[in-house]
Image 1 (cartoon, rainbow, N blue to C red):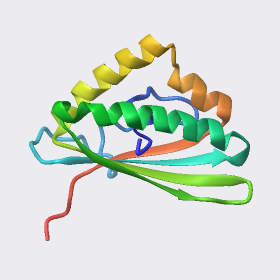
Image 2 (image 1 turned 120 degrees about the vertical axis):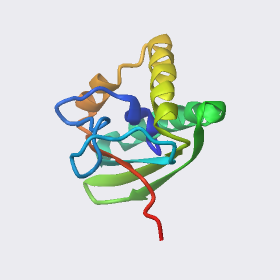
Image 3 (image 1 turned 90 degrees about the vertical axis):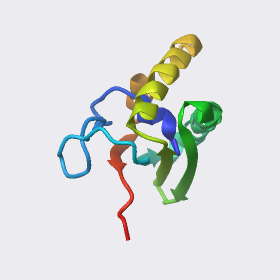
Length: 137
């Protein structure tokens, strides 16, 4: 979210979960540094409204997790003729905050009856995820 609701998903055929790796395929080390979660999505325009509706629901919920280490998020769109590209960026206090949020979001999805992997597959959405740390200047 931020299409953060996808940040808490399981791996699907069209959405690969790199939650235990950085963008360089090395294991994430425990740290107290802020962690930035960046998700990129390719969304067919025919299902764009459904995607945006779910994104809003999820982002609104994620923003309630400030006490759980959520700091801020942003979302960006690049519209196209047949598909649109989205990038979401979420900043978390540390890796422990992300793990805690995953549990909370998973419980919320169960309560809602929302199955994210099915949603992604059904709408033919493609997704990439990466966990980043700020480069010191």
